[in-house]
Length: 372
Image 1 (tube, helix red, strand yellow):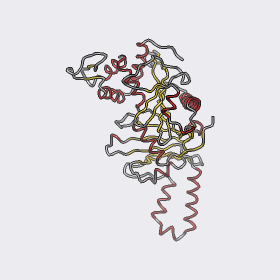
Image 2 (cartoon, rainbow, N blue to C red):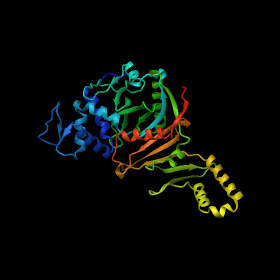
Image 3 (spheres, rainbow, N blue to C red):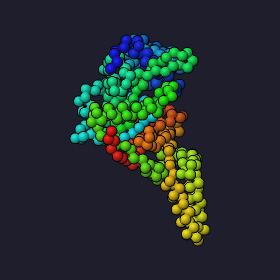
Image 4 (tube, one colour):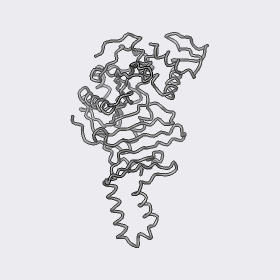
């Protein structure tokens, strides 16, 4: 376990982390600081004081807002909470079972894991290097339970060549009702061996869940996902893009038009041709069946590395996409990649809604138990 840092060093980790965000995400954080009452732009409302709101002149001065709040200990609870609820780029889903049908929160409390309370939280000023040494923090909110591990990471600034330290949170999200969870994480900065890093993250989280909480984990079986989404009554969920690799070595990626579903290249187009000319093909049923069998064989032997799914909301700026990557990490897991795009919602609700839909629609079903 790492030793405690000085307050200034600890706060600098928040600062370098948040200043590394995209401009859209920085603005989102500043808006949240305002909504949660940590800052104000009204001179009559507050002055700079550790027990009151921090006053700023302009809402557009994001850098000054972030530099000041991240270096103010009063704002530590805000940034700790933010790491629980932010949109992460990646997530790996699993189903789970707790032996003896124990309540998850009681199990977590029995392990002396701190339950996060924004009003009472006191930091220990420790950031560990490995997940094995890190002490998780738990958030219980609206029937959702989160465990957060924060690791130290660093990168070299490509312009100044200075080494920059930053916080790297990993969140395990539990939905107790559906008995599924997600391991959520972001890209690491300027690292050429990301896949190795991510595989270690997943394996370390699995090992921690199995050894510390004695939870049984099961892979998400996604074999029916494409058909479930294509045939769903919910028209706000749309299969937007799909990669198809043929056994012959060829491949194609097709994107749907905004107003219609897509048709698989070659295979789907010929099926449409047959449907549109049913009267003609019915005159030679043997030829029709031969062609259909050929198309079935092509689909059965094809590989589908990934699909894009679009969630269509009444307001377009709230619509969003996510990518489902099959057979991730040597064909063991499924990976969800959450696309920021033009969506204004950069919080966790998107992620919560995606995994809820996939599990409750039977796009994902419980697969084999993870034994290692």
